[in-house]
Image 1 (cartoon, rainbow, N blue to C red):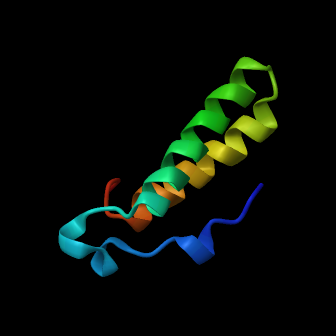
Image 2: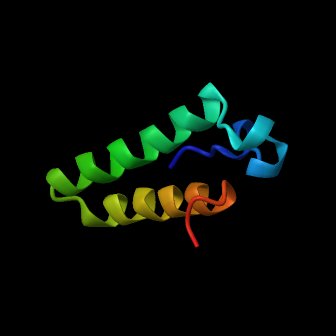
Length: 64
């Protein structure tokens, strides 16, 4: 799985809670990959990307 930590910052660092294009891209990529791997029957990879999506959502205070 690709690391997104270098291009990711917390919502506190984002201007007025808005995501940068890089942050938005990382969220979209994690969701797309989780779904693509699930559709391909590769559940281990799908779960890894789903976990990355949850991590990113929590990092931006979008998930409790």
